[in-house]
Figure (cartoon, rainbow, N blue to C red):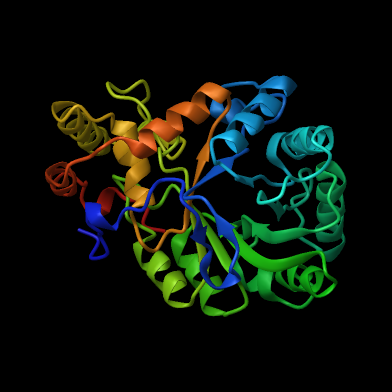
Length: 327
């Protein structure tokens, strides 16, 4: 279906080290996503206590999940603050742990102007308790568009300046619409990419984007592999894909995939996670976890045996392109 599919023999051990493109950074196949690590995360319909974050981080480190992805605006800054609090209790960032964050627009005005980008960086470093980061992303530039993001004095210029000032080794772009992200990739300015919700079992919108980033030698992260949760359980407990009501055609495809997985005694979530892990263009899959138990569950899902015949069947059930995000 995608033209880029790998076979079961291409799948590395789920948490064996991988090199993040030309950056040379080493990380596991699954990166812990911390978007829901604030005091309240209504988008994810949950709230985490501070000790949940500490326990989840420690369990992840013990189990080989040694990469964490956060952002300045996750939980209004609480995600970063809680990560920093745990790191301080450990005496600093443990050796071998990759921590990355993102520059964010002003949460009130929405501005990406240079002063805001500087404040975003300073806030993140202070909360995390680190002087610099190996990898720093620009987050969600779709709110102003490619042209404004790239203009003099815009956020891309700020991001590159922070690299030149020594606050980060590598810079990345993180956003939604795949066609817009392709334009950023094609500038050759970025070392890494995060795409979300657009490369899943049921939506292949980002396939060309992944290929272009891979061909450019960029490090590639794929996020939101469960499509906002609808691919995380079967029978379904949600009728929403990508945080919006899903069409009846999309839900029918998900149900058909769930039934196919059940016939092979494979959790639908295992197929959703491994779909991303097994793609050779994806270096690490960002997977949100909110408890030590979810760390363990993620490891089990990433390791669950999936026969080649099920992968082949699932490809026949991918909904038509008209059902994808197509942005």
